[in-house]
Image (cartoon, rainbow, N blue to C red; front, side, top):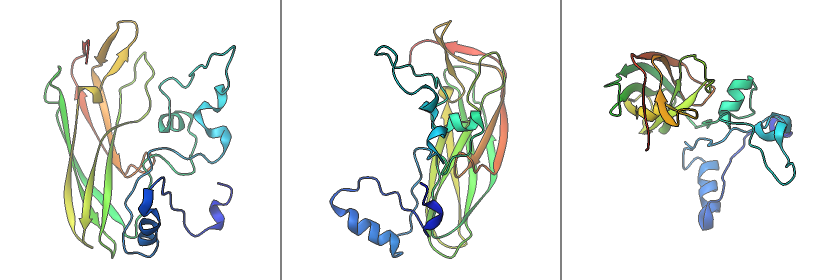
Length: 221
């Protein structure tokens, strides 16, 4: 988007169907307060795209050399700042996140569950909604993992100016595990897991951690 600094605002509307015009007009004229979030990262330049380094086929074969570092995980690993990050979105009001609490894990097996809660406050002058995103960082080890992985999200809807609410989030064993190719099992490694909470993959003002005291693995779904 070489013109990004030449415009007052950008609305990503995707494919809205027959009522696209009315929906866009409602947002532009303030009848509706937008609260959408980007499901992708938008790069500053073509060279920043994860597939750029390996784009093209060799003898009819396509190699996905990005491995697990796709989307926002690539930008985090390469320390490349996107134009607009995964999870980004604007509103006609502002919000503040606080009071992050982590509970768990409830067990160290298939029944594992980690719970989190966070307070969301509308600090602006217009009623609006905010999406809270929770990312997990695995402990360091012999296998390289993405720096951040989205594991839960929730929405505070129609908050009046000055109002607050508590958003509760949770994730299960898949939130701490990975597929171990050599063993052909899902595995969750013991160690300290960092939890980061915010409003996009690059705006994470709250953090905490929890400990998985023992490694466990399983096969199947």
